Length: 466
Image 1 (cartoon, rainbow, N blue to C red):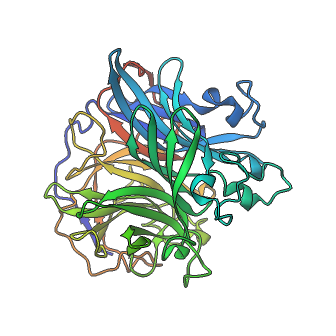
Image 2: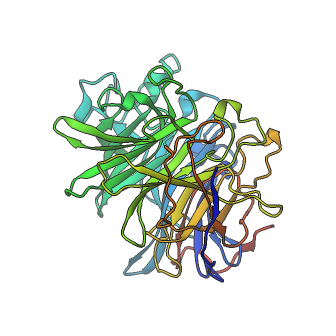
Image 3: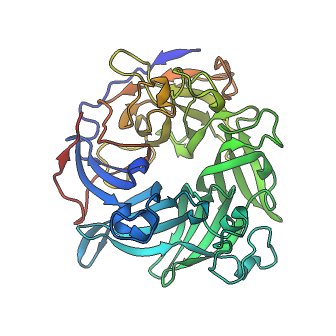
């Protein structure tokens, strides 16, 4: 294992005005945190917003054991004639002991003392475009999920709805409608959906799964999806699979994942490449294509246990829940990525390093607007801490900032695939900028930044306990 220290100096105050927006999944909330003052400014509590989905604490109709887990969030400040308003598009999955209760929703919420849902997607219409594909969804009526009767097979019920959806990408939005690309995780597929905002039911316009898309049968549990502008003007689809299909892939299984890029073809979608070309990443999340300061393109992903010692089957080890950031060069979007290195934080007595990493996004210090823009050295991480707390894992769920340069000349002949002993990886040590921030988080999933809030987020808040 090659371990190098990054030769750059930290900003004295790398996040002077930034507000971190975090999906705090284990606490069923989306939080806004002032990073420099380490204060919790605002919390969107899903059980209060949706008591019929998330339990009975607020008088809803959901079962006592129901929970709502937020995964992907997309914060922004929207300005109209009445001023700047804080809004967030959030995806959450409702769950209960009754598996038939599971269903995901995606909605835009205007924040404030009384949050308001602007639009919501919570049902699907397969009949308009897929009436003859009962294998995709055997829907009797548009927007009416089958299988609400527990006598129906669970798999059939889930396939007519979003189930444990983990990610979305907004392709287009205007005042009347929105088009979304969605990682429908439990159903092992990606959907394109058009939603008329006057309804909560979206029309499914495209399905990417093992029956429609070449090579998809290899993947399991798609947990991240991005629309990718291609050099010819088309739009590709980048999918991160947390796991692989052990029935079709040698040594495949839960936690043995990879990323794939799909591009438009003559008869649908063509597979451009898989990363790594052979072997696996260790439970990857949140892979994206990022442009560096030099203009070079890179495939960057949260390699959730990329610095651990074992694949998921053995995660009860103290040497796991050790994350990294996988970096590969992409000089040609249609050519397989060229692995460069995995980024880690060298552990010390004061800092155990990166835990089970869920997201890693670049930002530009001091730039107005969202923080997931291209950057040379500055990154914000959502570290979910430990997947196996029974093993005495030292990591705390947190938001943290680090520095590393995508244009670092370090290159590797390794494949980037995880394997016991990690011989397939090369490691570069990043520079932490400030201490990890914990506001009582439980399973943080993704964090993004805004630099200025609108009228929905207070200027001051409650100090986070450290």
